[in-house]
Figure (cartoon, rainbow, N blue to C red):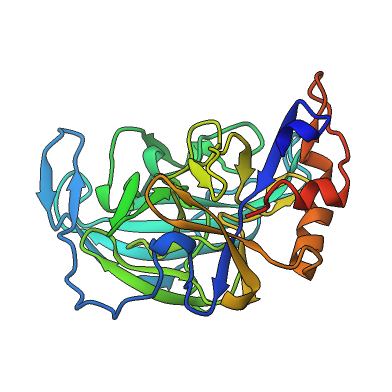
Length: 336
């Protein structure tokens, strides 16, 4: 099949189908959302500069809006505007350690810069009349970031473990990989999310109610959202899934499993809804025994949509330049 295509490299498309009897993700990773387990809160632990861990060093509270600290400058040479849409939230109180009695502040603001605008989240300790920026939980300072660095000091070593996203979350066969780390990027909003399972370390884990980013999320104690994507365990480091096709041959084609836009991927996993089991044809099986399907009808609208989205990056010549391919070549490549 592949030898008939006059291409050097061919990239296939792998989407996860939501169909009758198939569930949210193919292969049974999270085939059905389980009943929510009884919640047991993890023990809060904060690492002090001494390296000693003290349980209960922060008493967390639901974020509450507080007066904005005097830490902002006007427009800077390397930014197009002064910080705007500024909000400050009190999210916790230190009950032990060097900041005992202080308040943990989450400061959110928007800044337009050379490469566009984005929200930024800074973590400060307010201790009496002092402000301390927690470097491990805030973006790196830079010229033009809108902050008046004369108004605060920086503690680059203090770490709050509850704000560090675990690199991985395990649930049954599923492995979820952190896309967040220690720096907050977004406030948690559960409006369009549904619970999937309860993790003893991070608490309730959610996913999208309808097709969207198609990731997994939890609410950190400071009210921010931490993002995870699903590790495709039958995919190797070169994005070649370990699939044996029904004809007996092994797959050698690399596959994409996210939707794409002008700046790269637009979600964590490509999920298609509205497909019936009767629309599918068994195409192969992964090295873990998970079934892989293609659509019976090569003119199914979803295939045309995928082709229109990806045709500019599906095939490359010997110099690595994208080559347009025909729709027939696309459907013959087993978009699975």
